[in-house]
Length: 465
Image 1 (cartoon, helix red, strand yellow):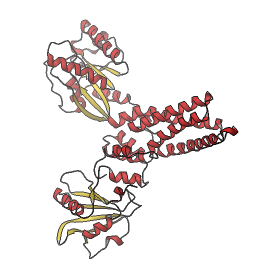
Image 2: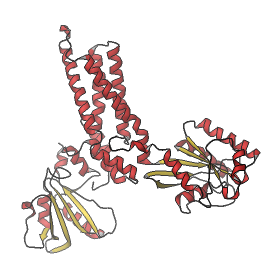
Image 3: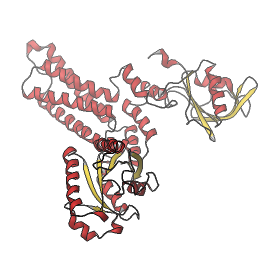
Image 4: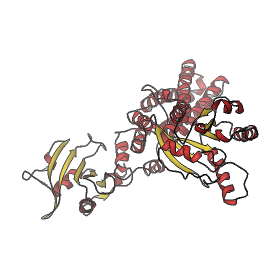
């Protein structure tokens, strides 16, 4: 292991700012010894280096005769700690001055500031976490909905790590037998049973296919569902956004073209994050600024997973109905994969039966954004668009784009292996594809790592975790 990771490190583990308490973490071979130098117990001269692991100690942090703060010190002896090393957590008062005074005290005494994610990186390097589990720690910290929390928690508790490890080991055993065959190529012998090997390849491929396919859902649950609200000017797009968010986020005006830029906000519905985008109205215009907004509307539609096309039921007539069909056809032709919801607004001012006769579409939803009539039913419809049934305790979902890429590459390599077996390709060529599959599976769980890979992963962590 790099000597860099034999240092004792320190970082503030709680968010910046003033609070009741703050937690300062130290980890490394000398963490307890160094902390003991500046700790004075409330009840006499307690030596922290002789205390048991997982114990709490009340006292003061002092520099010479100066008391910095009254603290609670938690001790964790390696390897039975989060990092696998000797670890100390100092709970002090939340003053930013106190926090910095304690950190600076230790920095002057053979301790260095931790880099982003270094505590979790050490946990990985010391075998406390698989790499996929370590990455899930960051996802858990950032989780902002029940769904994203559940996916991150599932992965941190093991997720697909153990299963992938076991399958990789089985594949590695067969790869070893095939490599052995190459050493005895002149004798023309087979150590690896081809039928058994083919069954294993099929089993692994099936599992990888399920994991790859789950990424579409996992990515949505982690990052939220982007929904673009589009339509002609002054049909109530901003009012709908305000009704969904239950606040006046967007400017509401009777003047057409009020919304010149996209307005975005998030709301959690049944544990899922939805990112609503209120866009500029779609219409022919000579206003240069407004035309730029309309261009951005189509850019936002491209980014969205669901498109809500909002129309004004109160002003709908035969001529507008024909124009409406043209506009919706344009969106469907340009974005055939998007889920499209057609919503008739302002039903508080309209006759629904008359409006239905003018709408040549199925499954039109009728609402009044102003009075909130139909808004609850709309949120239920949005929820139904997401297959949350996949979030069971037994299923696994991929939400990490690095894992998705690795699983996709491993699956491709195994497909090549299968084709090679079916076409009678020489063993040495099949072995190359097997090595590729093993490499990509190892990238997920951490058997295959590089300094650059680890640097990229843990650089996205917050300092102190």
